[in-house]
Length: 322
Image (cartoon, rainbow, N blue to C red; front, side, top):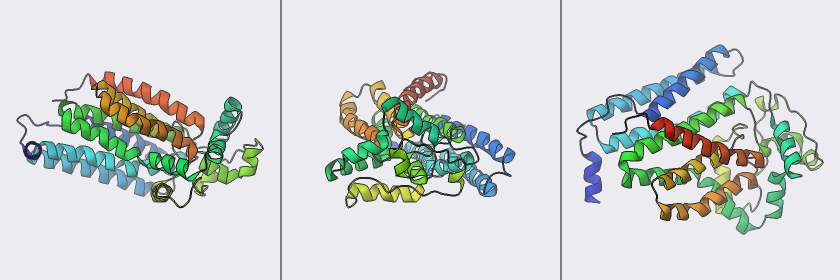
């Protein structure tokens, strides 16, 4: 422990002069969405707040860079990374503000689930597995998303420090790629769509086009399953804090955790991989169980997460990480 604390504050001999790779990714996403906001500001609900929000994020990033330059050590580097991940809580609902001006596509994805699987898995799964045990396990698995991200990246920070920035870049870049997709593919997910059109229509195989309904409504179905458990309340609190009718296709929960599993395999930490595997599988199942995603969303999350991981791994080889 003493060695760990000492290393946290040990001044780096060759501190990084510019922004970190993951900060450049954030800046690129910020600029692209800022241009999007300028061009479409007459159609957005509150473009001024979105512009000022981006300015605050940019200033925060530059201030943290300044702190690091004054005290270049592992701790200030870690804080820079942690803040960028914390800011995802701002970037996520921002996708709703940007994609709500486009026609909603849930009717198409619900129909695809029906055509491909002969039912609505997001509806059937929770009905067939409604016991408190299944409900609690899957609810907790879903909310374990960010703890799982923290676990893998902190493991890198502790035991694979030379790869820490690279791993953080891959994960954060993955998030922003997903967010860019959400802006141009506005899919709210079953919990919002089923609520909007009525479960009776869904059971009957009727999937109406809701057009711009989610521009003015953010109501969703209550989370299915056991309503008195810890996992249920954690999930409900998380939804009330920041959930929006956005970001359903592909599932970033599945995509990002798939990237995490590849990162663990990359450093050949098989013990950690086997510890995380049950949680990962349960989390993938939970995305459909709690009706956050259509089954096609979760399958696409696995495919895109794998593609993004290997693509970003190749890109990352052109950066200096030391």
